[in-house]
Length: 266
Length: 130
Image (tube, rainbow over all chains, first blue to last red; front, side, top):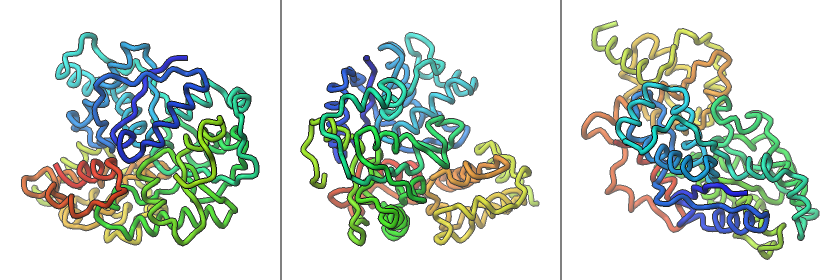
C-alpha cells in the first residue's frame, strides 16, 4: 500500500514523536508513506469566511501534488487533517472558489477535489483493518486502560469531516482495543482542550483540559491518546493534578508493534 | 436599523453565509459552548444581534477572542445556523481593518514557552490578526 503523506509543521518540530512513530509503524504494517515534496504549512485553522481564498492555497497545493502521486493523501495532525479535508470539500463543491483558486495557481492540470484525504486512523480502519492490525501486534498493551481523546477537529463538522459519529465516535476506542489495551469511554472525550486561546490566556485551556483529564480519570483511564499537538500541549501542561498520562496514539501503536519501549512518558 | 448597521449586517451575512432567520432560539449553541463562562456575548446572542443589525457591540467584545472554533455550536444546532461562522465573520470585520490586529508579531516571543507547538502560534495568528 502506498500513500502520499503530509506531516505538517509541528510534526517536524515539537511533535516529532507523533510523526516518527507513525512512519515506523506504517513501515512495519507494509505501508509506504511518501512525504509530499515541498509541502507548505496548512494554516492550522480552516478559514470559515466565504471570501477567504489566499489562506486556502497551501492546502490546495498539497492536494494537487497528491493527485499527481496517486491521489490518496494521508494526514496525521488533527488540525492539518481538518484544514486539508475541508478545503478539498470546497474544491469539490464551491465552483466560485474552485475557479478563483485554479486561475490563481495556474496548475499544470486543473484541480477539482479529486484527491482522497485520509487521516492515519482512517487508513488503519479502512485500509489496514482492525483485525489485520491485531495480527501484527507483537507487544499487546494488556491491562492498560486508555481513554480516547478526540477533541474537536477530527470530528466536527461531521457533514464535512465524515470521520466518525461526532457525538459517539468509536474509531480511537477500536484502535485502542486492536493494540491490546482496554478502551475507557468518558464524557469529555469530544470536548475542546482550549485550543489556540492558550497563546493569550492560559486559564481557559487549564479549565477545559482539566475537565477532560478529570473526566478520563474518574472513568478509570490511566492515560489518554490524541492525534493533535495542540491538544497534547494543553493536556500535558494541565495534567499535574490528575495521574493521567497523555500520549500520541502513534506512540502506543509503535509500542504494540514492538518498535518502541513502553511505559515511560513521552 | 441605520444604513451603517445595514451595511455591517450585509457584510457579516455575506462572509458567513449564515441565515440567522433560521434560529429558533433554543439556546443549544450557548449551552454547549466550552467558552461560555469567558464570553460577554454568547453564541446565541451573536445570532440574534446580527439578525437585528446590532453588530458594533460584538465587534468591541472580548468574546471574539474567546471563541475556540471548536465547532460544537455548529454541530449541535438543530437548525443548522452555524453560529461559529458568524463569530468568525465579526472577528474578520475587526482584524481586516488596518491597525486592528488583536495579536501582533512582536508580542509573540513573550508568549512562548519551551513546549508550545507551532500549531498554536499559527492558529492564533490566523484568528487574531491579518
